[in-house]
Image 1 (cartoon, protein in one colour):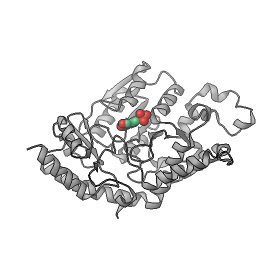
Image 2: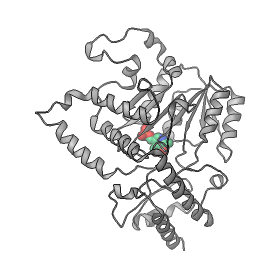
Image 3: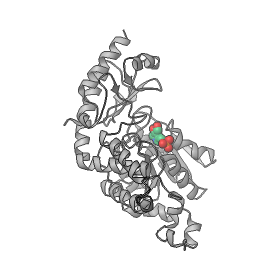
Image 4: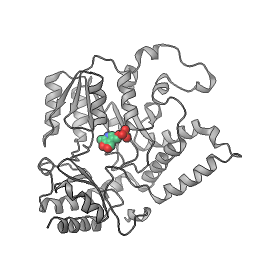
Length: 360
Ligand SMILES: Cc1ncc(COP(=O)(O)O)c(C=O)c1O
């Protein structure tokens, strides 16, 4: 499948920077232009239909990722959602965080002074998590599904098993570096909460995010407010108490509408097909990189691998890579890349050639 044809990527650019921000398909740009002019057309009434528009996007998103609409909130970004979530949970919970996880996950816990323990991260990530959950009496596990520096992806069947073995453990996953790469069914995932921003693998630009929340956690959040009165004003008649926390105020239809466009795009192409494409493409890349000893040792030893790869070459090569048209980013001990549907084998070959030239 020629997924690249859906995107406008200049010949002299090798775009492997999805872990920083993903590209939008060409159709998104035309949709955004048309939406913007129709929305602000004085004669039109789109501005009066914001609520219904957002509701449609939620329905489509919930359908694609198997999450009932009542369990889904649309957000401006992941961080907003996590802060809102933590503010609503009881203060006495003990958290397990992953060592060196993205700061937007760990700092809201640390800066609130919440009780926490860190899980050391190595090639046996799942064993380390299970050990901490067993020994440390944690109430909440908070982790990114794909780690932003190393690309290590937690095994999703492990999460399901962990939940089955520890039904009272609240498992919160950040899917920012994951959602959009394969089929995902929230209701069967074992996660209580999965949230993320839409501008990376969802290819939906900035200003949108999502949070899927289980019934159990919904019942725990803002418990006192949930026992109080619901808003009585007619324009808020459909808002739940949790809506008033996660979706307070008017939302930007351009940003959320772009997320809606991505949902339609992914549905049309089929997440199974995208998964298959990415599995083949990344296997090809991993093989090439492994031959050259460019993989992190912990990643080399793991079975399941993500589409985010940290290439172990000197991060100072970044400038030369940029000059060669390679859009990537230095992270940790190497150069971080991501391979999404707009990349193909020729991109991997080109990257290997360019790095080979620079690394001489
Ligand atoms: C794992 C992970 N979570 C979240 C984010 C971004 O969160 P936000 O859009 O709230 O800044 C990133 C961005 O790099 C990320 O890598």
